[in-house]
Amino acid sequence: MFANARCIGEKNINGEDCFILKLCADPRTLKARSEGPAEIIRHVLFGYFSQKTGLLVQMEDSHLTRVQSTGGDTVYWETTINTFLEDYHPVEGIMIAHSGHTVVTLFRFGEVAMNHTKTKMEETWTIEEVAFNIPGLSVDCFIPPSDLSITETLEFPQDERGESAIRLRRSAERRH
Image 1: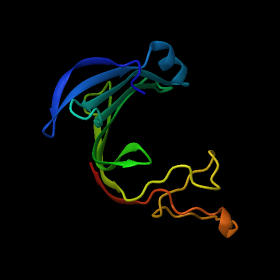
Image 2 (image 1 turned 90 degrees about the horizontal axis):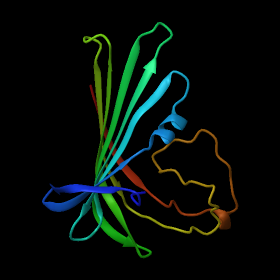
Image 3 (image 1 turned 30 degrees about the vertical axis):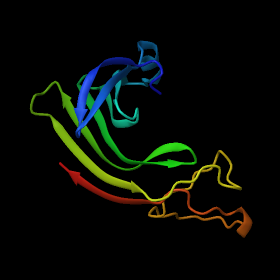
Image 4 (image 1 turned 135 degrees about the horizontal axis):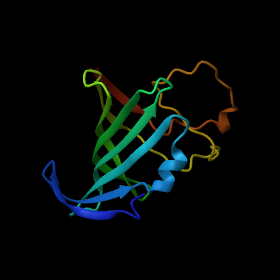
C-alpha cells in the first residue's frame, strides 16, 4: 500500500520513534472515484512506521468530499480514520497487530457557518486468533466475527466448515 509513498518526516507515537510516510491519491483516481454530485477532492493516507521494528504503529486515512445539491448548496464531508496498532505477534511468519484503537471523525460543513456537524466514533479492538489458508475456504469467502448476527445461514458438511478465523471483541462508543 505504501510502495509509492513519500517520507515526510519523523514523529514520536506513544514513545516509539516513527518515520511518517504520506500517500496521496492522484487527480485521475479522485475523478474516477467521484460520482454524480459527489466529488472527492482529497484522499491522503499517512503511515507511521517504527524506526526500530519497521512495523506500522499508526495509520491515518483522510477523505474530503464535496456534494453539490440540486438546490445549489454545497456541503463538504471530511472523514478521518485514525488507527493505532499494537501487540504484534507472528502468525504463520507474518507480524499481525492483535489489538488497537480506532477513532473515526465525520465533519460536515457547508456555505452556512452555523451548519457544521461533527461526529466521532471510537472502537477498541482485539484479535484473539488469526489463521490463514483455512482448509475448504475459497478466496471469495469471508468468515465474519462471531458477534455479527446472520439472518440466513447455509449448512455445510462438517469437513467443509472451518473454525472461525478471527474472533473480535469489540467495544464501541459513539460520541456527538
